[in-house]
Amino acid sequence: MVGRVTAWFDDAARDLPWRRTDCTPWGVLVSEVMLQQTPVVRVEPVWREWLRRWPTPSDLAAAPAAEVLRAWGRLGYPRRALRLHQCAGAIVERHDGAVPDDEAALRALPGIGEYTAAAVRAFAFGRRSVVVDTNVRRVLARTLAGTALAAPSPTAAERDLATAVVPDDDGAAARWAAASMELGALVCTARAPRCHACPVADLCAWRATGHPPDELAHRRRTQAWHGTDRQVRGRVMAALRVADEPVARALLADSGPDPAQVDRCLAGLIEDGLVEQDDAGCYRFPTP
DNA sequence: AATCCGGGGAT
DNA sequence: ATCCCAGGATT
Image (cartoon, rainbow, N blue to C red; front, top):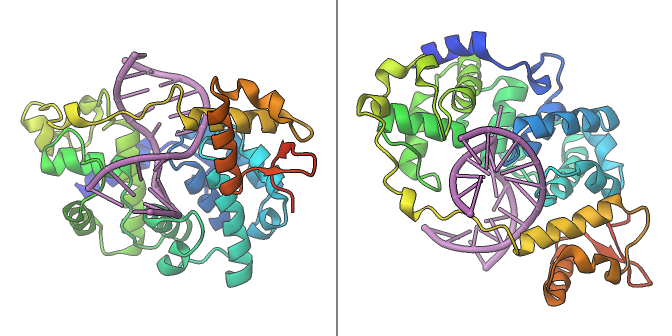
């Protein structure tokens, strides 16, 4: 399983900038945070711009939060940008400006959770770690468990299974992490898997049983979007992004049909540290 | 364990 | 109109 997937990866891997040998650990960390719930094609141009402007953690730490939020653009979940900014500051303060390779130290950084810490350790430092993202979970669910999709949130049994599969050797483990993720992203996709191009199709439990559908499909609840606070918050952030100066409340009226909702979202954005009010009561990104 | 948190492209 | 995407923090 591991050998065949990594061999496949040697040939099929996408040439992504954060995979190049000249990419720094900081570049890898930035890519991982940007890739949290945002597809590769949308991340790549923003990542290039960020690494050009802020090639090191201390460069980003020194930038104003407003510039960071602006540069985040439409990647979504702008709290990630704020945390990445805080993460850069913490790397400067706690680690002398160098991205740590220790899993516990990584986990302690803002915006770095279990997945991202393991991914940075593997991809930036070539060290063994158990990297379990949505792709790996799906690949393991299908090949080994024989189910169409993994459970909504990772279970302990799933972690144990993922851990058991990871090779002992640092380099082999890091290659498996990248290869298993890539297999899920390019071949063992959620919607229309390309089993004909899969290096382990002949040993896939899900395929062997005729691709049974997801038993929990009918209970999976898709997140609403239209009319939600998330949509309104997004519109407010977009309005502030394009504005050159603080924006009056009246100009944010078309962020949502319900004024009370817009006010609630503004309060939430302020609470989250994404927005602040100036002396005139106009809204803007945080200033130093 | 459940919720909240963006946004866009594919189907 | 629905689904999916290299998740994390909070409760």
